[in-house]
Structures are given as C-alpha cells and as structure tokens.
Length: 76
Image (cartoon, rainbow, N blue to C red; front, side, top):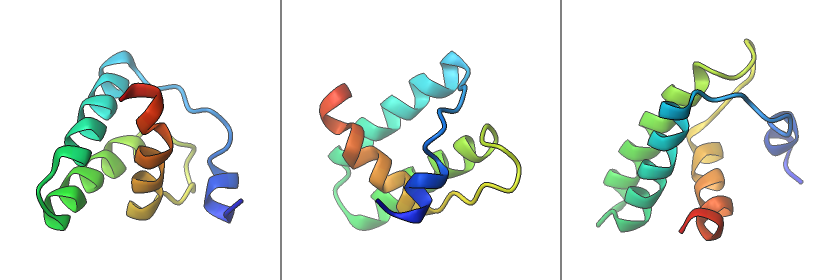
C-alpha cells in the first residue's frame, strides 16, 4: 500500500455535514465532464478534509482522488 494511504489509515472523525459534502462531491467528481472539473472538486474536498486530519498530516489532491475511486462502489 502507498505511504500516504498508510498515513491516513486511522479513521478521521468528520462532522455529518462534511461527510455529506464529501459523498456529494464524490458523485459529482465521476459526473464531471473533464479533468479540470474533477480537479476542482477534488481540491475542494482536499481543503475540507485537511481541516479534520491531525496536524502535520499531508493530504494531496491525488489522495482525495484515490479516496473517491476506492469509495465509489460503497456510495455509488
């Protein structure tokens, strides 16, 4: 498994509204018409999630995109 995924293995506690926005944006990510729209959606979630991970945790755009892909089947 990748280093970043290992660093984020510990579950993070998200407020319900943040979790709901994550799922909404994940669905929008897969409906996006182009790479730019996908990047904008992932960047928005990267910033939102960064507010809830332990200080010093590095969360990159590619990490958020990977989370979207990994969770796609769970949340459709």
